[in-house]
Image (cartoon, rainbow, N blue to C red; front, side, top):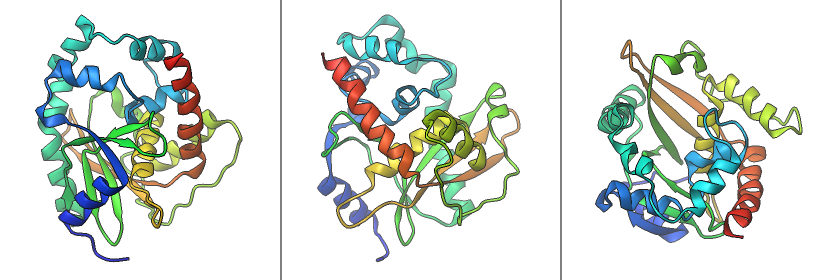
Length: 244
């Protein structure tokens, strides 16, 4: 596998994915409206039943409503959301310094050409001998209980299907990675988006700053074909309901 450059990555994404919008040029309202036309990576936890705050019926209602609600307009102004956006470059910089892995930050929302109901934005795309997604998060004191900060980094981890129940499977492997299930699925959808006919992205990372202590930790997330297959199949079925 060749060593990727920044231009290689941007060209690769443009060749393999459809650009929906440059999100850096959208207002909060415009961005909220664009997100209604697909299932983004952050929606994957709802699609697969591991989101703590939203269920499928709520997601269907949200996507069908093609006007932006007052609540949706205000989401970007919430302190936690604003803080996350403001600190994202800081988290990614900490990741680069900790790992030596350079990162490209594509400004676009991308649509999958083969599965057009699915979209994603990348916080960062890491450049090793392969290309990998890097998701940045600010972890609140409440959210800390869902992480295992002292878990050894295991890049040899290989996902095995231990149960046909996708929810239990996600919970098991998210726990193995030391991260919440709802971020495990998000990284898996981003991994899918870095695939092409001749290449499969093998893993991703979740990079986190813990809000109360300012500890920085990053987590290795191996490719999970079982979850990716459900993101595609369950997402497509749910989108049929939304579009009906």
